[in-house]
Length: 72
Image 1 (cartoon, rainbow, N blue to C red):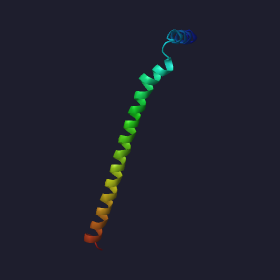
Image 2 (image 1 turned 120 degrees about the horizontal axis):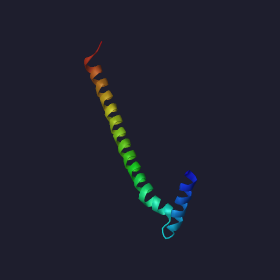
Image 3 (image 1 turned 90 degrees about the vertical axis):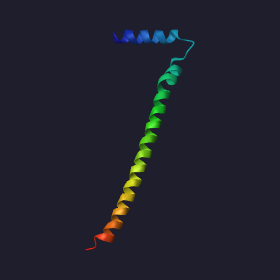
């Protein structure tokens, strides 16, 4: 059954001789997925960078406040 489906798919792909199946796949499936992955990756890295900077500022402020007000 599986080989029959593969053969049918191959014949269907051959019947579309005017349009290359790989180009169609790349245009309709892979390109939007690549764009979405790139957007998510940049968004996550920007957010991570922002959170790391916030953490550094917070630790610096806490260190300064501890030295100023919590002298033992």
